[in-house]
Image 1: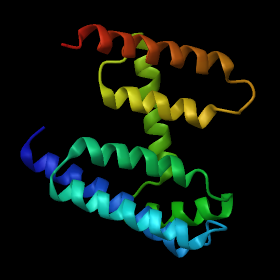
Image 2 (image 1 turned 90 degrees about the vertical axis):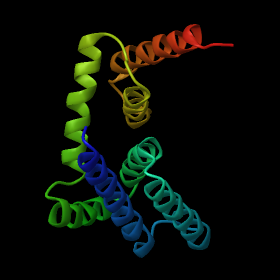
Image 3 (image 1 turned 135 degrees about the vertical axis):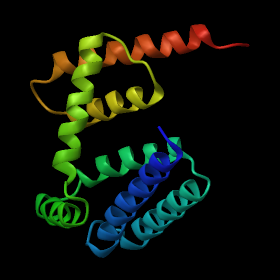
Length: 159
């Protein structure tokens, strides 16, 4: 990835996550609005700090976590957020989710996780499926991939 491509990706992730955070701040999303606003504003500061430091890993974690949080909103709020994202970025959470599912399928087909980013992608999928009936087999398969990756990392760690 060229330096320019990295800068563009960093900017996209920052802009995407800030857009979602702003939507959440403007939307009635919690019984404890003050605590949620504090949390979301802290999250925004962390994203801006990661962007300033050009910390791709932290931005990607924030991107993943925030997309998962967005799916926890009411269906009407998700639909409204998707309209905003589609207008600004030409795709929305659904499109991002489809891209993730393609990546997850490739990881499952390969049979192992290669990077921390793939690990967190698989973890996010498990979190999304948690509590849903009929996905136990997929969750078990994904959990095995995560366990194998964790064991591999532990065995390769230098003490």
